[in-house]
Image (tube, rainbow, N blue to C red; front, top):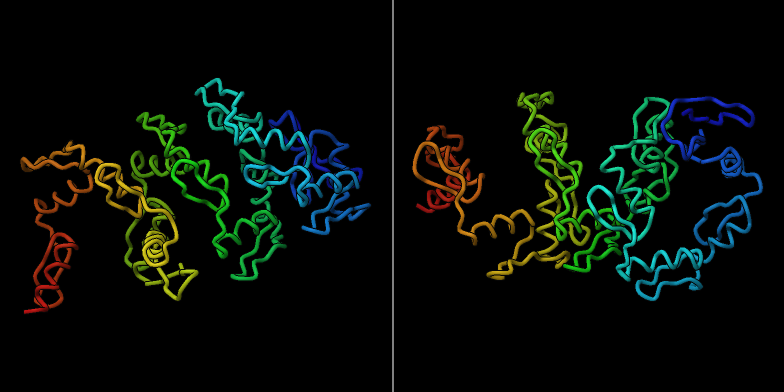
Length: 385
């Protein structure tokens, strides 16, 4: 299959591509189309020919009928009575209502997961097929979704017309700027029906729902372990099945497996605190610190509560570790002594006792310790003497 890229009004440039549905791509914004006629209709948006603009949001349309249909989004003509969302027409409203009714007539033939729309099923199917039909004609990088390609193209074009007035970040798409602005405003319109947790983005809510459903569609081909997110699978492969450490710290020379790990590690040396609280002047190094601060001091967020003892937690990982302790299982045994532990992290900390390796030192009396927690407790006592 060939992709035809319209470079001019009459010029066709062809690039190999596997998408049989949308072979025509706009060279200005890299949106894909099923026919040359649709592409030509779209191109008029960039050439400003016969363009009709929405007075509410500035979105532009080739035909006046498209603008009139779009204006329904800003009115209450096709408004959902459940959540207040306004749709373009009766059919789109009917499709939207399926989200609230729970009706999911479309089933995945691989994992039997059901969806309310054919579009949702089509997007989900790419998880199993690994199909990446949207290919950058500059560097050949492939993407599952067209919006990811649009965003990627700004790397080559440098066109980021939508600028944030708060922090000067710039974006190639207005939708990305709108999504970014929610970080500053704290607006979280997408709420989980099961735990009342709220999110600024719908895709993050969908990922969160896997916490409740237990859905883990990403499977490691080396050890058969499954994950709820593709990023978790990639991190697992890098950390567990690869010995490469290509990223070196410029301050201490430590080699790390991922660039993300290096970025976090460097903060230890620089002491930088890039994260700020929107309610006060406090700044933080880690996202976990900011999340804890917002919940404890500003009551922003949702406490995670143990259903056995009602103990509250900020982070889901801490709750999971706590629930394992309720089970009383100690599956992790030390190979040096009879001690057993419920968590691998506890076993790793304990094993330092056998290593006879003291990494932490009391700055007051000079005594060495294996664990940071131990030297902290000691230091408080030591300074009071």
